[in-house]
Image 1 (cartoon, helix red, strand yellow):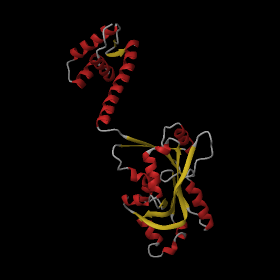
Image 2 (image 1 turned 90 degrees about the horizontal axis):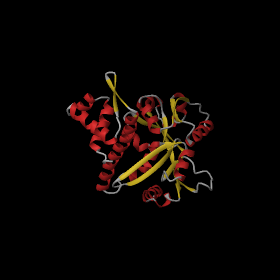
Image 3 (image 1 turned 30 degrees about the vertical axis):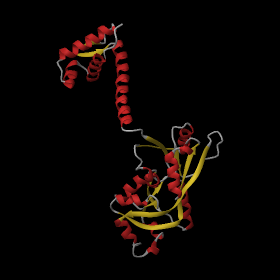
Image 4 (image 1 turned 90 degrees about the vertical axis):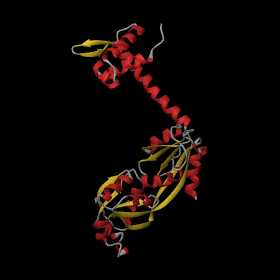
Amino acid sequence: MSSLNYRHLYYFWVVAKEGGFARAAERLDMAVQTISAQVKALEQSLGHQLIKASGRSLALTEAGQAALARAEEIFRLGQSLHDEVRQAASGPALRLAVGLSDGISKLAAHALLAPLLDTPALRLICHEGEVEQLLAELAMHQLDLVLAGQPSPPNPNLRLSSDRLLGAPVDWYGPTELVRKAGTDRHPERFPDCLADLPVLLPTGHSALRATLERWFDQRGLVPRVVGEFEDSALMAVFAARGLGVFPVSRLGADDLALMRGLRRLGSCEDVREEIHAIRSRRGLHHPLVQRLMASASA
């Protein structure tokens, strides 16, 4: 059997994707007759008809469908080859796969990862999900590190270790109009009682911070009017900036709020702290970027 002509296969692939010879010719800027001849040559090489007439259009035969499926795989691999060669030519990438649990502040997570972002050839991959799912991926070495609001639960089968990275105080921010209404810039003592009169945004129940805030409200006899709940602190900040309400944020992530216009600090609750724990597998203990993150957080 003669060797496969990949140019012929490519023309067939374009015809199949475009749904006809005329569209394929327009896409390739070639004559219809030329493309038709190339596909005929492929059919002769394979010994099977790949395309048949179906009314005024064309349809793939069963052999054509099998050929198209394999062509999709071949050209996808071809694109991967280009990408891998380009990456190899530019130097090896340093990959870091991080799992971010649903419950932690994404603004705080960004601040923790910020010291790594200047790493040459960094390839940062962030997955978000439930803690249990992320820990399973960590145990299977699909992730190098998980950032969560609580330590890893005891499980000798997973062989994971946890370190508390930080416990940052929580500040409250809101749109300028609501902060002015509360008057805490002139009368700081109005905080936190002013929260009872303002629309409040909170993290969802996935977050360990939510439970801490609920206890804090109870201790002060506050019944906030909750108008929104968010898993993502950055998304919560966006809605707050649009005027929806005031919200709590870890002081570690508060620096990123400067990137959003229209947000002002309402007050601070020093006795409420958001904790973030780094959970690692044994392999993650030796990852250079994980070690760098741990050192930066403890500095």
